[in-house]
Image 1 (cartoon, rainbow, N blue to C red):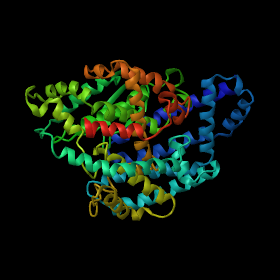
Image 2: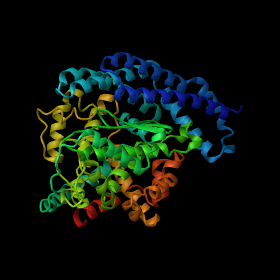
Image 3: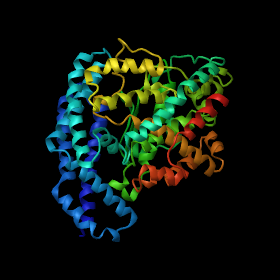
Image 4: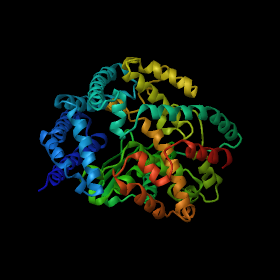
Length: 499
C-alpha cells in the first residue's frame, strides 16, 4: 500500500464517523426528546473529539509528507484530494483536543438552550452559554489564524470556503449597500400599485406536507436516499446517500414553508449529486458553503419564484388545497406576486431576495466587530437594533425573538457562515444566467415541471465537481467570469422593475 492509498483508507474511516455525526445532529434537531439534550451533547462532544484525533494524528502528517515526493504521479482528482487532506490536517493540528470537545459541548448545549429560550425571549438564560461558546470559538479562530497567517475572522471564513477573505466580502457588500436602498424604494413604489390578492387560510398541515413533498420530488430529490422532516430551523444534513432535509409549517401561511422546502431541496440536490466515486474522500465533499448556498438559492430564488415554475406549480397548489382553478386568488400570477413581494421585515429566513442581503450585511458587520474585540456578546441586542434601523429602518428594541434570537447560527457556533448566503445569491444568479444560455428550452421545461435538463446541467457543471477546484475557479470555469454582483443586480432589475 502506497502512502497515498493509506491516506485514502484513513480518510474513508473519518468519512464513516462524519456520517454518524451528521445523523446524530439531525436526530438531535428533529426527533430527540427534550430530556435527552445533556446526554446527546456529551455524546456529540466525544465523537467530535474522536474525529479530531483521526484528522490530526501524527501518522497523517507523516503520510502526507511521504506522498509529496510522488504527488506528480497522482491523477488530477487524487492531487486535489491530497490538497484537501492537507487542509484538514493543518486546520485540525491548530486546535488541541480539549478545545475541540469543549467547543462541541458548548455549541450543542447553547443551541439547545436557545431553542428553549427563544419563544419567551429569555436572553438572560442563554447569554452565559453564548458567552462561553464565543470565547472558545475566538480562541479556536486565533489559533487557526496564527497557524495559517490569517486574521482570526479570515480563518473562520476560510474554513467555510477556501480562499475567502473579508476584503472581498467588504468590497462586494459595499457594492450591494450602494445599490439596494435606492432599488428597494423603487420596487416598493411599483408594487404598491399592484398588491397580491390575499390567500384564504387556514392551510392544514397535512395538505401542506403533501404539497411540499410533491414539489420537492418534482425538483428531483431522491426519497430512496433521503427523507423530509420538521425542525425548529430548516436545514439540510446527512450524507449523499442518506440526505436529510427539514422544514417547518404554520397553518396560517403555506408560502414560506413551501419555499423553505424547495430551498433545502437545492442543498439536497447538490449533496445527492456529489461525485459517487469520491464520496468517501475529502475531494468528494461539497466545495464550500457559498457554493452550497448558491444551489439552494438557485432553486428557490432564481427558479421557483419565477413565472415559469409558478405557471406549473399553481395547478399543484390548487389541487393540494382543493381550490377552484378559475379563482384569481389561486392563479399563477397571484402566486407570483406573493412570491416576489418585497417588504422590510424582521426575519431573515422570511425575507425577499431584495432585502435579504441587508439582513446578511447586518450579521456580517456584527461578526467582524465581535472578533475584532469591538463588541461582546452582551452588546448584541443593542448592536442588532442599531443595525436593523440603519439598514432596514426597523427597530428590534424589546423584540429579541425577532432580533438577536431569531437565528440558530451563533448559538450553534457557526461564526463566519452568514456571508455565504449572499455570496451564494450572487453565485446563483451568475450560474443561472449561464444555464439559460447553455440549456436549450430551459424555461419551457421548467414550466412543464421537468427539472431534468437543469439538474443535469448542474450535475455536470457544479455538483459532480466536488472539491476538484476552488469556488473562484469553479465560477470562472462555468461562467467565464470571476464572481461579481452584476448578474445578481441585473436579475433583480428584470424581475422587480420590468417583469
